[in-house]
Length: 581
Image (cartoon, rainbow, N blue to C red; front, side, top):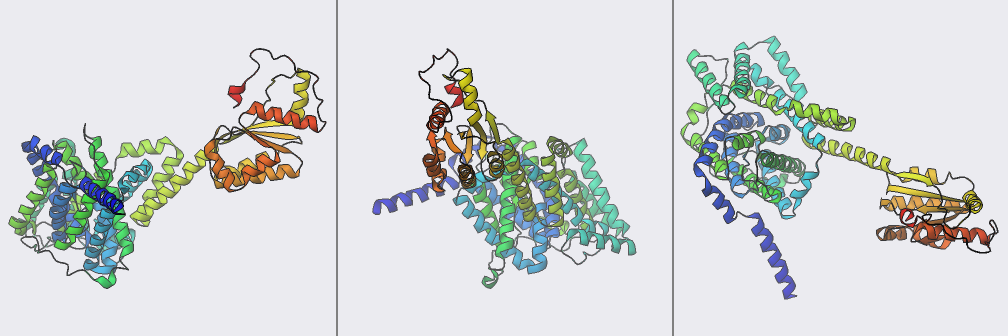
C-alpha cells in the first residue's frame, strides 16, 4: 500500500515539475538580453493602446485592460509554455465578456475569470493541451474572421461618438448606434477613428516595425486637448498604479450560475492561447511550445488578473507576432513588455487618461481589419466545398451567436462532413472466384452458385446501412463469401448490421462464409453475437481460398455440383492466395 502511495506521490511531483519553469528557461533569457529587451519595449508600445481599447470595450474600463496586460502578461510569460508568447486582453475575449458584463456586472466578470483560471490549470494537469491540435483549419479561419467582424462592429458606437445603445447582440447595437449618429452626427469622433485606423493600416505597409498605433493615438490626444474638442470624449481618469490584490468581488453564492460563462471563457482562453503559440512557432526556427505548460501559465494568469481588477486574458496573436518579428528569442521579451506597461501605469496615467475613445476605436478597427488574412480565406474557400462551408458557418455563428457556439458548430459540421467522406470510401464489390484447381466447366458451375464480395474500408455507423442494403440484395445463389481482410475499422453498428445481413441471407437459405477477419475485429463481432452466427451458420476462415473450398464442399454435400473423381492438376500461376487473403 505504501509503495503505491509513493508511486502516486512521485507521479504528482513529476507532473508538477513538468509544468513549472525550468533552468533552461533562465538560460534562454541570458543568451541575448539586449535583443529581448528591445523587442519587449516595442511590444509594450504596440500593446498599450490595445490594452486600453480592449479594457474599454469589455465594459470594465481602460484600467482593467492595463491591469490585465501587466499581471497576466508577466505570469503567462514566466509560467507559460512558449518562449515567445505575449498575453493580455484580446478582442476575442472582449467579445465573450460583453454579454457577461451585461448580465452579471463587473464583479461577475472578475469571478468568471478566476473560475476559468482554475479550469485552465486543471486542463494542464490532465494533459489536455495536446487535443487542441485537432481543430480543423477552416474552423480556425472562420472563427478568426467572425471575431474580426465582431471586434469591428463593437467599435462603431465609440467611433461614431454616440453612447453605447442597449442590447447584447452586436448587430443590434451597431444598427442602433448608426441610427443615433444619423439623428445627431458627431463628425469629430468619426474623424479621429477614421484617421487613426487609416494611419495604422498605411503605416503597417510602409514601416511594419514602427508603432504607428501609439503615434496616432498620441497625436489624437494632443489635437483633442489643444483644440478643446469636447466631442472627442477622453478615456477619463485612471488610477496611478495597480490596486491592491483583493477577493472582495467574489460572491460564493453566484458561483453556480457563473459556471457556464466560465467554461466559455476557459475554452476561448485555451483555444486562442494555443493557436497563438503555434503561430509563433511557425514564424521561427527551432521553437517548440509545450501546450500543457501554456495552459498552466494562462491559468495562473487568469487566477491572478481578477485579484487586481483585470479581465480574463489569453495569448495575443497580434502582439506575439510583433514580438517575433522584432527579434525576441526568450521569455524576457514578454516580461519586459509587462514591466514597461507597469511603469506607464504608475508614471503616465494622467496622460493616458486624455486619449479620445474614438481614437482607441480606430486602433481596434484597424486591428480587426488586419486580423483578416485574405489569402488564407481564399485558399480555404478554394480547397473543397466542405472547407468553404465550415469556414462560412463558423464565421456566421461567431457573428450571430457567440464564440463557443461557433466553435462547437464548426467542429460538429467538420466532424459530420469528415464522417461522410470516410463513409464514402467504404466499398462493397463483387469479385470473381479464383480458378484454383477447377476446369472451366467446374468454375462456371461454381460461379452460378457462389458469389464473393470484398469489403474495403471502414464498416461503421456512417457506412453500415448502405452495406446492408447492398448485401441483402444479392441474386439467388447458394453461398456468399465475405472477404473482410480489407475492413479497416468496425464499430458496434457495423457489427450489428453485418449480423442482420447474415440472418436475412440465412432466412433465404443462403450460407454465409467469412474470410480474413482481423484479430482486432473479433471482439466487436463477438460482443453483438455476429461471430457465433458466422461460425455456426457457415464458417470463418483465415483465407479466401479456404472459404471457397468450404463453399464447394457445401455444394457437393447438397448435390448441387458433382463430386470430382480426382483433383485436376494446378497450373503454375493460377493460385492467387496472397491477393485473396
